[in-house]
Length: 137
Image 1 (cartoon, rainbow, N blue to C red):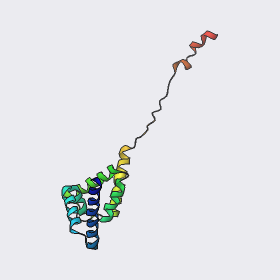
Image 2: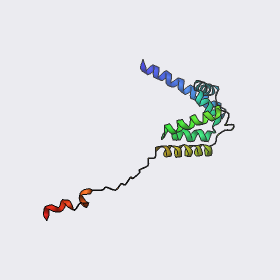
Image 3: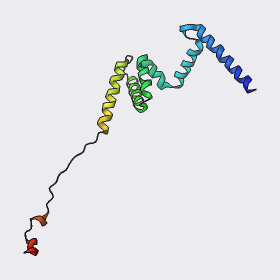
């Protein structure tokens, strides 16, 4: 029974792949509906798809594997700019790189610690006292 279900699933998937390949580069309506529903379910991704060029989105997705917190901060920054009306054009890859460098620089400045040496003279009164040397006289 499990094998029959698995065969039915495989057949359905094969038919779906054949329909998608027949539609060619135009894109099928099923895949477009899937993308629209994904964007509708996540408003953050919908805004990012409006304001980012494909190369910039790709750069962020690659960086997300290494530094997800930095990508989240860049995305929040860009969404904030867009919602405040400051951002009026699509962001390309070069602008994403500049933004990432700026955020990295800010993070380094905030996390750098400074070591301050406070050198004080230690005055030892026992060294300067000649009265204490009476024991050997």
